[in-house]
Structure formats: C-alpha cells, structure tokens
Figure 1 (cartoon, helix red, strand yellow):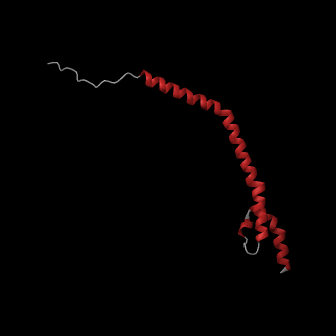
Figure 2: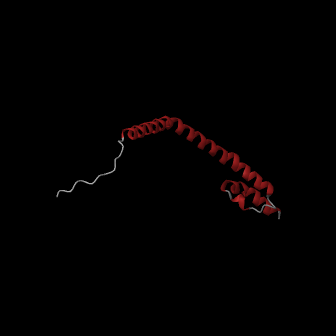
Figure 3: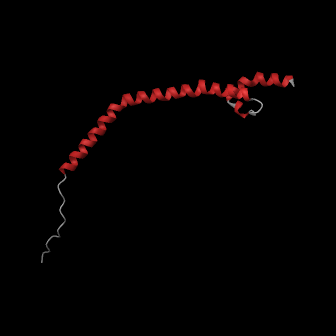
Length: 98
C-alpha cells in the first residue's frame, strides 16, 4: 500500500499539470484538490483575467475616439437629413387625357 502512495504522489504533479486532479474522489483527496484548484486560480485564471482587462482597455482607448466621432457624425447627418426632407403631400392622380 505504501508503494501505491509513493507512485501516486510522484505522479501528482502530472495530474496538476494536465488537470486530471479533478477526477480524484473528493472524500479521499480533499487537500490535493484544494491545492490543484488554488494553483489553477492563481496561475491561470487571475492572470488571464488581467490579460483580458488590459487588452480591452487598450482597444477602447485606441479605437474609442474614432468610434465616438463616427457615431456623432452619423447622428449629425441623420438629423440634417431629417431636417431637409420636405413634407410629403398625398399623391394626386394625373389627369386623364381624354
């Protein structure tokens, strides 16, 4: 039995690296699962969240003024176009040549 434990704990780093630690039974390996989830949280998920936040903030600062200018231009053009539209009159039938 001790040999099996040595083999398991010698292969545990591979379980953490590949994510197979999630398949361990929770009743028997609670501490190992906590270590695995903590490593995943601090070494993978939180850094990825920061990457997403920083990439989005750079994209907004780089393209934000262009988009705002384009939207303002479209609003101005649409308000000018509606102001220039003449009032519509009902269509009258053309007199028949007769």
